[in-house]
Length: 473
Ligand SMILES: Cc1ncc(COP(=O)(O)O)c(C=O)c1O
Image (cartoon, rainbow, N blue to C red; front, side):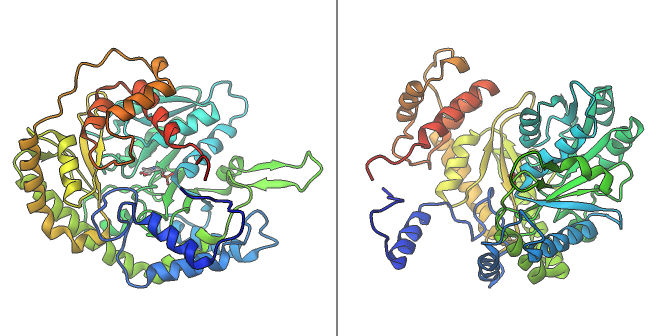
């Protein structure tokens, strides 16, 4: 139990030892065996550099660029680099945000506030768009029109049909997180432009690797600001730019398009608040760390990292194709390998892979899409991937031997029935009480069977159960 406010201060050595002990219980952020949440280029000395840069600017406040011109210079440099990589020109402007979700919320805000007279502004996205668009729509009270996809890709005709007089933004992915496929951006951008609607490309996930994959010869469509009709694009530096967490870039084709993104308020007795992004006070730490990362790796370095990633994807995909019991669910055209079952219980398989040190991300069934296992592949995987094929075979065998999860009949549940007491009993019954999350097949099977609203209620309840202050430390 951690006492965050001890009566007397604790020596630095002890604090760091305690933090290291806590961190030892986490999944491994390095080593190429965790296929979600982390992005590891496996470059010697990069972590140390990024940490030093972070420390140098951690206390700097991005609230006022006239007080801290260092941060303004760094932000402008990062935006310029992203614009250069993503087809921008002399008119391109942008902002540094804290992550993909913030970039998407701001893209939606800019589009909404460009039409102050609309009563019910709406956003059109394909069903494979990231959940952050739903969050943006929810926070900003913008209606969300979710359009079914065809073969995991946005369907331009169906998207066109969804655009109405109140649509302020159309968006699509390059690539989608769940399957790693790139939507047909030129066709979609044309459809939006024809109707005079803004079009945002969510390249948060892959925006920093796609240009390099294309340079390496990958057959991928144009997706960036060079495509006519694309009005904004987002790219997370804490993903394939391999920067520490907390940095994304939102680019707009012009300053005029960016203007409604800003929030300004002078009508109070304190300082006039002008915020280009959601946060007001902002640490310079992540921004300096991102700049250091980009400058250390450089363009040639990113090309090498993309080549390693591409090779790792190829080897992983071949392993999936060669293994009886699983199959590729989506074409491995970017940096994702997404596999589905061909006879094995996927959730048991995910546990068996984890038991062999490969941490993947199960994805639940959604509408007509079956459950899958997602692998975000980063450059570090290249050095560990050789042993994946044999471990996958062994994991499939073990999953077959264990057999599929058989749940006892559950009472019909509705979200309203999910009380804190119910969650506490369920968590205990599913073996989650002790904080061991290594065997999740039963839990995932329950969640997979639950419709989205019930799944949301169950997981919200569970997170709320976890997030409780420590008593009596
Ligand atoms: C395509 C896409 N968009 C947006 C996001 C949200 O990014 P963040 O988690 O940095 O808020 C992600 C995260 O994985 C993503 O893959």
